[in-house]
Image (tube, rainbow, N blue to C red; front, side, top):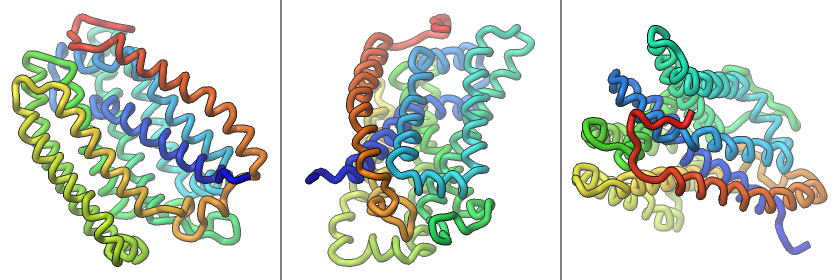
Length: 336
């Protein structure tokens, strides 16, 4: 067969991961933004902006995880073994915030503060755990044969924890620009002010990570700064600066609503592309490539048929959902 199924499955998993980061990023970011407002109407509007679509965002997480399990079982086994604690923490955060998402609208007023706190802290826990997971994956995992040979706490490093905090700033920025698109009045003005602060935090975090990563990982330094790679990768930081300056200006323009969110998506994509540049072709950095970890061709082909049928359906349903619930939202509009 002339088609490389391992590469196709790698692309599907990357696509599902990127879709999850984009779709659930502003959703989780809204939970993080609860830190900046206690106003009941503001919080209701923030939650209502994603209420019709938030539960469908997890579809991409399931697709990515299932694809990894089926197409690269060795990678799935190693990653789950190495990152059991942060993965469990992420799932606890997602479950807790999901319950709080619905209960806060049904609860008595005396219980509303508890469910608001649950939604906020569940979101923060999920984001923080995801940041740790991404950085730990980039660092790699020690293997003995085909088994994880490290400690269950190998992920607990200062750099990994910093990346967790950096992802909170990133998702909060995405959430703020989403609310510029979806809100108006006092909440819109608050989000415009927050966008610049969060953008600065995002850029500082990216600068620290971009310096810290090659200093701690020699293979990444060689990948980034060797010739001619440095010329190929140079457009990435230049594009980040360009989009950031554009976002800085447009976030304060009264007639700009969709552009800040689109620009933030661009920044997120550039950050994700930097991760892809750094790990290719390893699926268990730094020693196991995607071809070495791939399942038998028959298994990959069997799953691919079903995936190619279901992904267009998911995309169509997602696009239709966002189209139906387009436009500004108000605090008294509920979809619960």
